[in-house]
Image (cartoon, rainbow, N blue to C red; front, top):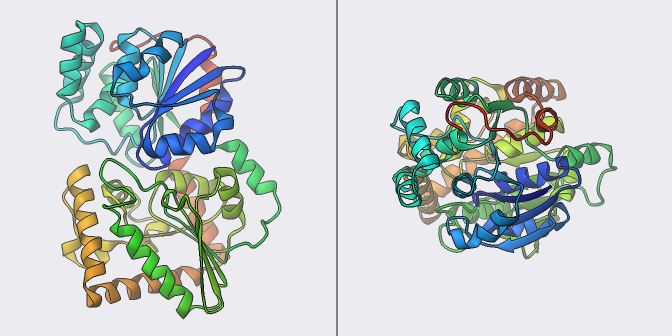
Length: 418
């Protein structure tokens, strides 16, 4: 079987999920086309793919050859690839870790009708209909169009599945963590790495439709300044390891007796560090939460990088992990952002930039975040375990391996919208 694949280029979440599920297709040839952070991650994990090429799935010329050769398409949150696969009549499996997040003012029935037009209309009409949808609506329509689709569990996801199922998407199924089980199991059984950090910080892929490493990067500068001060103020943290896509070129600094390393580790190596690190801090990224739960590590949730993190933290309200989280909203109402993916993300970038520019504002932020870290360090092993158990109950579901085993090679369209 030949598979043509891609993943949305927004952080490491989508592409790490694609890399996690490729081993489930035993004996398959798996080609990947993508760009930006997704392409970078795929190249660093080239053993999971047969062929890796740079390309933009919004452009038909970049996917035409792959579709012509493919028996099946696998897309992780890349709605454009689903569009082209459906138009080419190639079966498509669609994976989504944020189903409850996608915003729309349309009814699901309206989206289902548009999915029918995308599937059955002429090329020009299908493209026009798809282009009139917002990026979030395209993801929802991709679920309706896919041969099979899978939504990773999180508060709000089961209800969204129910609404899509009533609109005809009987091929949409709930699944548990879409993570690299092989790498996680290896991390749990492996010995502690040499030079284990006292504090592991994971800033993820960071890049998305607005944030980048060069200009819209105030969050990275804000956290680097705080980490530098932390090293000076807390010498018991002898080694701090900061991982993320922004640190493709490793940098090491020494502040007193504390060594800070900024780097981008291969995912398997990062998980090995996570499995043994005594302290772990990460923004409220769903992939990071799923991995931490499986490894039985309770993270300190760092302030939000983008609007998706705002909604993730809101969905966890009332849980222990949210109670200990650091959120910009705690600094005042001016840190409340528009309820819009792009607008909210732009606002967060502007607000973090303002924190850096105003010394008094920055000091308030740094003191607050340091206090959150201090409180997190005071948690007992029993409190951490209880918080992990609570979170695990919210994230559990059938494994992707089990769901894929059920369909085997029978990728038969089902549901009224297929």
